[in-house]
Image 1 (cartoon, rainbow, N blue to C red):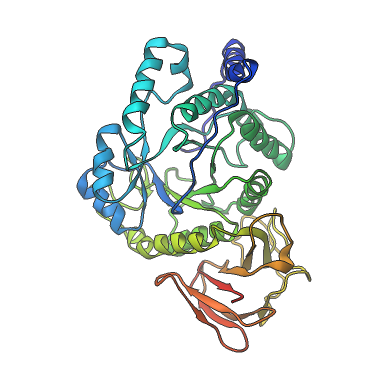
Image 2 (cartoon, rainbow, N blue to C red):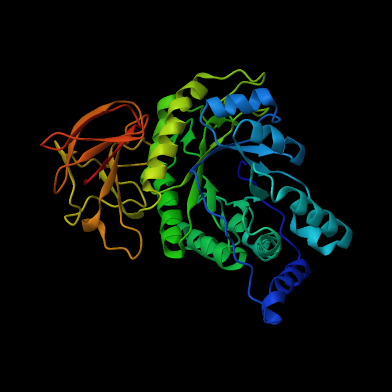
Length: 424
C-alpha cells in the first residue's frame, strides 16, 4: 500500500492486452455493463488479520462494513452481516492468457458470484498507466461474468512521480492524465486512491489537491470515489496520527463527496499505531472510530442521492482549494479570518461541502445541504452557519434531523469534526 515503483509491462504484453481488450468491439459486441452500486457507503481498511468470527465481530462492532476475505472466509463475513472484498491470486490479468488458469478463474467466479456476502473482487493496488490495458481486459472479463460486483483497483496519489504514474507534466497535469487514462482504458465502477497526510516534519501540502482532482473527474464521469487515509506509521519519516487527526481525514473526505473511507492500516507487521495491535487488541483509535465510522456511513448515506455542488475553504486555502465566493448562499458567523498557508504546517479554518439535487450541476447557489468541517485538528471551533432560510441539523448517531434555531445552526465542533445541515 505504501508508494512503490511498479515494474512496467513489456511492450508486447501491453499490445496483446490492448488488442484482447478490444476484441468484443472488433466483433461488434457491446462491452459488458456493470449493475454494481455502492449501496451502503463503504467503511473498510487495508491490511488486517484473517477473517475469524472474533475478528469479524470486532469489525462489525467498530462500524466497518466491508472486510477482506478469501473464498473460505465468505461465510464468516455473512454470519456477521459484513460485506466481503474477495482476495485471490486468480484475480490477475496474466491469468487470462493461460487457459488452465482462466478456467480456474471462471470456476471461482461461478462459485462466489451469488454468495450473499460478496461485494467486490480485489484486483490491483497502485498500478502505473502501462498496466491499464491489461487491467481493463480483466475488469471487462469479470464484469461479463459477474456484472453485479465491483472489480476494485486502488490508484496512486498525487505525490507519486511521473515514472510511477506513467504520465508526463507537472503534478496536476500528470495526475489528471493518469486518472483520465485509467477511466478510459479500465472503465472502473469506483475511483479509489490513497494519500498519506502526516509526516514527522508536518503535513502534506497536496492532500486537498488530491481530493479535488479525484472529486473533479468523478463528477465529470459519474463515478463514486473512496479515499484511503492514514491510520498508522510504517517509516521513521511518517508519524502515527492521533484520533483527532483521523477524524479530520474522515470528515474532509465526506465534505468532498466521497462514498467510501478506508484506513491504512487495520493491523499489519512493521507498522506502529494502527487500529488493532499485533495480538488483535483494539487501540484507542479503534474506540474513537466506533462512532466516527457510523457517522461517516450515516452522513454519506444522506448525501448519496445528491450531487456535490462545490467545496469551499475559509481560513487557509492550500493547493487545490477554493475560497468561499459570493455565489454560496451560506456563511459562518463570526466569519473565519483569512490566514496564509505554507506547507508543511497544518491547515486551519473551516470547510463547507455543498450538496444539492442530482443531475446537471446547477451551481452552489442551489445547494440544499452543507457539511461544515473544522479543519483544525488541534482545537475545537464554535460558530453558527447561516443560510437563505431556516436550517435543520443532522444527528448522525441517531440518523435524525431536527430544526436549528431561528438565527442559524450553532455548532461546537471537536478538532477535525463536522456537522451536516440542510434547508428543510
